[in-house]
Length: 238
Image (cartoon, rainbow, N blue to C red; front, side):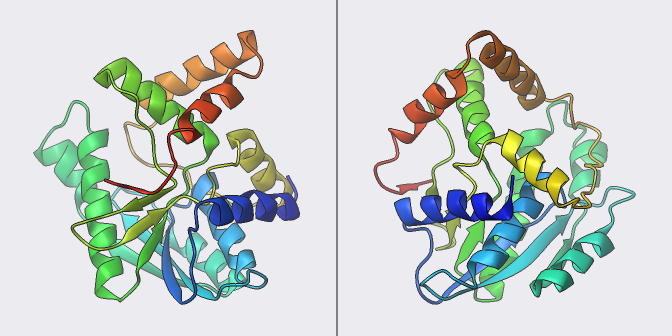
């Protein structure tokens, strides 16, 4: 996927759901994986031609796993002329060694978001951008149906009542295949996820299942995404 196509996807999402207003200060959650780097490139480029002025900053939550390379993220941020910051935490040790969670993803996500939101609020930024793409939204809906018995997925814009922040998801129209295509085309250096639960979670299972269903029923992902977005008439509280 060429970067111009990425800009088109992201601008459409931003316009459809009024994700960005004049003067916004947006913290971009960066893990170093393909999704978050794609989002960083998209918003860094969008700054130069979008009619509303906004600032961005790359913020990474270091979970404390061995082998995490923040220096690689810093180099990309310098190339894109984006400020960056790393939040050092012990989340990995707490979740796996102290709490000994058998299903660690929920607690890890809660603690990671808490650390990110607290920092973003402390520096006076008003929005957080997450790199959830189209496939992520579909997978979340299926996870909710399978394991919670309800129809739920990420909203394009989410107001966080406790902090006053807004979460935006500018990659919502981008299929994961296009994210992979973008990263490959521009030979972006991604960072492997050091989490020991990566690829063995319920989400990993749902991802494989969705791929199989879409192979057997071409176009099903687009229809599922349409069903999800039909629910998002306006931003909702989380």
